[in-house]
Amino acid sequence: MKSLHSLLAAIQPGLGSGLPDIPVQGITADSRQVAPGFLFVAIPGTQTDGHKYIPEAINRGATCILGSSMPEHASGSTLSLSLDEPAKAYGLLMAAWYDFPGRQMQVVGVTGTNGKTSTATLLFDLFVSLGYTCGLLSTISIRVGQDTLPATHTTPDAGQLQALLRRMADNGCSHVFMEVSSHAVHQDRISGIPFRGALFTNITHDHLDYHGTFDHYIKAKKKFFDGLDKKAFALVNTDDARGTVMVQNTGAAIHTYALRRMASFKTRILENSLEGLHLEINGGELLTRFIGEFNAYNLTAAYGAASLLGIEDTLLRTHLSALQPARGRFETIRTAGSGILAVVDYAHTPDALQKVLDTLRKTKPRQARILTVVGCGGDRDREKRPLMARVAAEGSDIILLTSDNPRSEEPAMIIEDMAAGLLTGNSGNTLKITDRREAIRTACLLARDGDILLVAGKGHETYQETDGVRHPFDDRAVVRESLLATHKLTNP
Image (cartoon, rainbow, N blue to C red; front, side, top):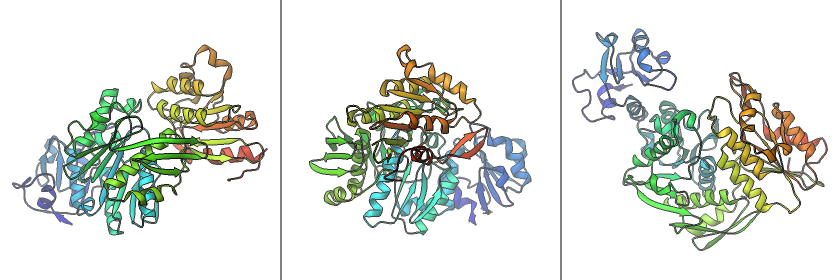
């Protein structure tokens, strides 16, 4: 329990001074969770507006209501306060409710279209290997020291986020590495977190179903950097044309990383093979098991952030060289005898798929063919569907268009949207199989000795969502099962 005035002071000193300083039993933005003595924050959302539920919150016993406008229902014994940015206020209130856990740790956020999970996980694994107790908030999982929790969103809502940070602080975490999605920035879910550092990986076509335009998507990412203070660092990829745009208005100390341009952290690829990368970062060499140029960027970003957090260069190279890729990120499955290599990757944007295919083409044996299984999610950005198919066709010898997470849409219709992007010459090398399991099995049957099979789009996910139901489905398990029919696995 905390006093109303102490909570409101987290939003603005002296805010609510005209209101009585009553005790607050809890805070929520979900009217269904309101109990007597609660403070309810009405937030406009993408699906519904929290202001519609103010009467319900009052009926459930809310003693104070915050929102951008107050209906007549909020009069009487229930206190009310109008605010311009209720979502931002909610984040600050939740930070105060949990005694500002972010202030007790060094929190580093990673944003961008691709590479967020890999970079955040690299940093987490790196610092754990160095002996630190850390927290991780990622698409794949949430880590609190040694404990692993399931992740439901790339970035949780402000209440869940502050509760997790409190748990991390109480468990002795010194550092927290988290993915910061454009949705989270736009919805002010990260309000109340004093970031020690922020990383920008890249930005390409994605999430236009939510943001509407690419410009709005860019601005959502940029807002993260606009909110940093002078005690923080901003580390941006300047090989991406919008890297410098991200930090135009930031108060943070600006640092850069790149493979092609001059930068604070400059990497050169000495060797890129299916066995791993041999890199030179700021003049020092690094051998890793990671594959591909895109991972060279992720490794450089992690190297730069760790350096800015005070880790010495020799230690960085030693510990980075021992790390493994994140689950479902260019995860390989090999078979003995035939030499077939299967790669499972989360690539679900045209740019990510392009990078994975480019890596495979540059590193594969000369005679090897590339067979790609790929789909697109339902109820999401439709504009990228034909682009995904075209990228797959241009980088593969055979493509199998299939379902991803169809959600409420018909898989066959999603596949037809994708097929619209195919050029005339691609049609002969394209199969359309709506059942994803059958598509993977077919690709395994078509694969010859020495071929490479790419299964893209779901990566670490262990489900397939159809009509609101998540059915168990793991690309990695299905690939292994299919290959086991005719091949003996060397790394099951």
